[in-house]
Amino acid sequence: MLIERADVIVTSPGRNFVTLKITTDDGVVGYGDGTLNGRELAVASYLTDHVVPLLIGRDAHAIEDTWQYLYRGAYWRRGPVTMAAIAAVDTALWDIKAKVAGLPLYQLLGGASRERCLVYGHASGKDVPELFDSVRAHLEEGFRAIRIQTGVPGLDSVYGVASSAAASIGDDTRYDYEPARRSALPAEESWDTRAYLRHVPSVFEAVRGEFGEDVALLHDAHHRLTPIQAAKLGKSLEPYDLFWLEDVTPAENQEALRWVRHHTTTPLAIGEVFNSVWDYQHLIREQLIDYVRSPITHAGGISSVRRIMDYAAMYQVKSGMHGPTDVSPIGLAAAVHLGMALHNFGIQEYMVHSERTREVFGPTHEFAGGGLRPSEEPGLGIHFDEALAAEHPYERAYLPVNRLPDGTVHDW
Ligand code: CS2
Ligand code: MG
Image 1: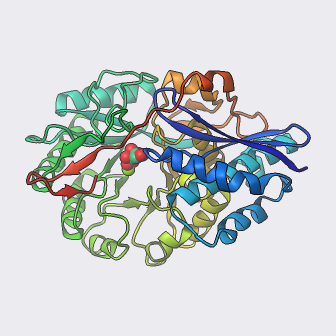
Image 2: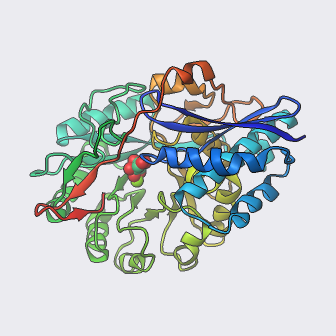
Image 3: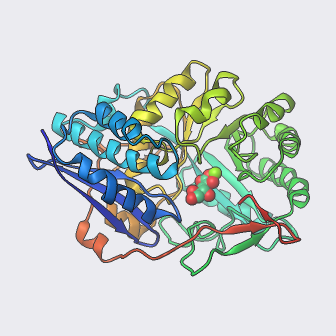
């Protein structure tokens, strides 16, 4: 079975997505996600200009060989653009293989290791009462694990806080704090670490007081702290028993996590901006983290995230794949199939895509019992509507930029 065509589709039903559609000579179609938020066209060009010509005529079943051919063959390895492009190819080929086998993809990855993949949703509020409303809404919707982000007194806007806490599932404004904004230039936000460190523990104290001990709580520090600040935060949150504390320091410096680890027992998650197993080499072997955040979309696809997770399994490190709305429903479907099969699955991030996005992508996975389960149809379970996708052309968009009070650019 040979690859006959590969088409790159950029669509923007509320936000931008890059999709690769591979068609075989006997008409089987597979889809892969290569969306890189705010830099989408770089991946689209990498695919169209450099990868698609290499795919035509290749054996569609040779997934590992194609992965190695694109990774080693390019000479220039790793990096988010390269690895998102490889991810799109890898995912589309797994979709095809499972469709040909007539099986839902998780069956080819080893079969179900659980009934469903536990997910966490994003609750937020400008202040504590608004946050409580959002947590309550998530609990009513069935979430059993919830990420907590709030405004910080003195700061105008903070990452992770929606402008309307009342927005419901599928509403475009529910997660309006982080869609790459459609403007000529990135929006600019301001940041004050001391104010943040003073405020966050009181928020978790309030949430535990209101909602009790059962619900799993998570928090994302979004790469903004120094190792010693991160250690202090982890320590101050210990009484509130977090499921994880995410991205406490900028991810490039793996040694920073050694400092944090020595000072706190709060579980640590990192890696949404990592894109290969090499980025985890020391973090996993030295057991400096508890959860791996790499999504299939940015880390070379199902084949390579599986490699990361097999390495992680030797050290009791679990998966916590990145699942923001900028990973398309195809990327999410792939994560749910892999999550069903992995023994060391931990949790899956689940920011529900807007109605418009879901109409274009047609995902079939189901949310129930606080978790996601893939449908039983062959492949990934995606019904992509190309005509509808074409009605939503690309619009330039940027993630925000963050500055300290004196104007210095800070980690976003
Ligand atoms: C985030 C993301 O989901 C998360 O944990 O850190 O929202 C991240 O900011 C975006 O995916 C960036 O594109
Ligand atoms: Mg994050």
